[in-house]
Length: 417
Image (cartoon, rainbow, N blue to C red; front, side, top):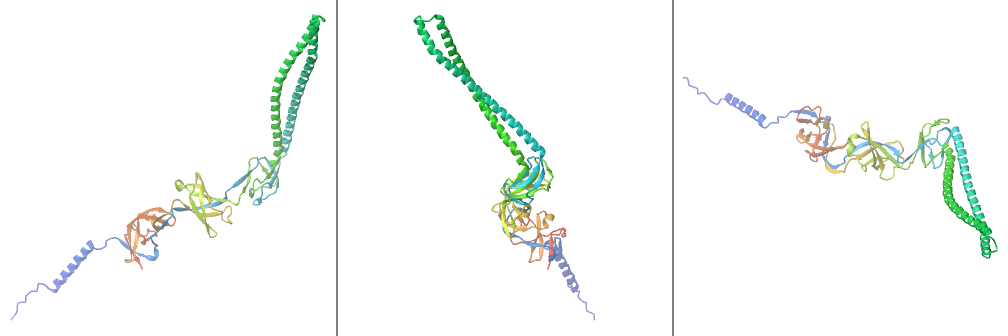
């Protein structure tokens, strides 16, 4: 007979469906709660540059190029106009003080000097003639005084004798009066002549001093005029290396025209153009250094030229110690110009990432997971080698420093081995 079959509640099919549903729900919950939902992309490690954050001394400097120039230069400017008669020293030669460099000729100047010398000699002769006349006038007045004194010396005893004779009634009144009048006249004449002589002597003394001063100035002028032609022979004022423009025999040089210079070659400086961006940070005394022939030489800013041309201004840097042997004028040197004091900091090497992130975030590499994740950071100062890390990174962490332009908006990079 037939048996009634009992229907089973937990069939394998039902169990399978329930398990599948449970796994599906669990997967959805995991994806919603635990799974990493950030966008990611795979990146070949060989196509990126990874750098390690390190602790070290941050030096705030900029690289600049300087041109070596002599520290002291004496410019040669023509004092008188003339045509080059002879070139005695060629450009580039070493000269000593007093060495002849050029010989010029100027016939008009020679004639002018001769005329001026003639005029000065004429004026000097006139001054001497005037002084001679003053001396003669002085002698004439002295002769007049001597004559008066002589007459008084004769009349005084005669007057005294006539007065005695008159008292004895031996001569008339008229005879006494004649002698008396003549004697008193000479006395009065003596007083007036001496007063005039004293006044004239004072005036003559002042006038003769003025004449001596004038003659001295004229002699100085005569001496100066005589040396004008010496300016046609150009001599080295200091020892050094001569540098002249392109000049030829017969060429005309105008007064005041610069035709060369003498460089003192045992002292050098560097003329350095700097971007105007750094003008507020540049001060006298800032130091820099450069390498030459395997040695490092220190320099410091000695002078600042504030005029800005083409977005740059210039500074002069001098050597802190002796100039390097073998360096020459016109050489270009690469100088590390320090803008501030060195400080200890976390250092991140420079790279192309900065133009994509502005230094606000980077991809930090986790070697264990093989991934690189975005992290917000803050950078400070920059030099050509490193950024100063203010916050967001610690020593030993690895960062992708190459450009991020190919990463899009992905937040996680899967680094291929």
